[in-house]
Length: 120
Image (cartoon, rainbow, N blue to C red; front, side, top):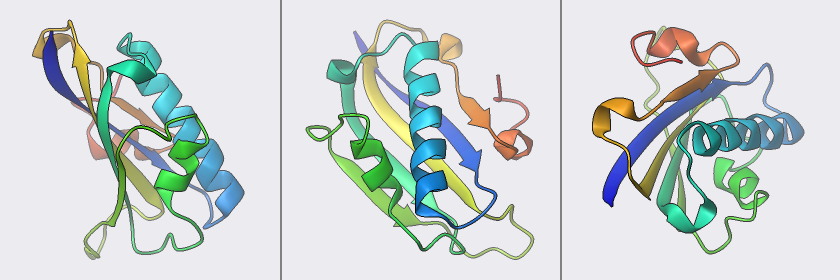
């Protein structure tokens, strides 16, 4: 069993707590499903938000999936001029039986432009 980091990102249309919850949960579900990961396989999850997202913490949305026992951390992205707005990025650390090259990183809702080389 190896520890792998799985990346993902999603873009919101507005700074809205309900949309934050929906988008983050949708992204995390896809990341887990596409990599065959269960919640017991999770080690930790780091979530970041661009500075224009202030209405709620991405980690609060993640807890809505029943991740209360998984260490979660919300942080702010750097405020880089020209960066894609309203983006939540996620890095999941999990124990999986996947070679590094078979890990599926998930980008959705417009965030695919961030890493076209990784987006599925």
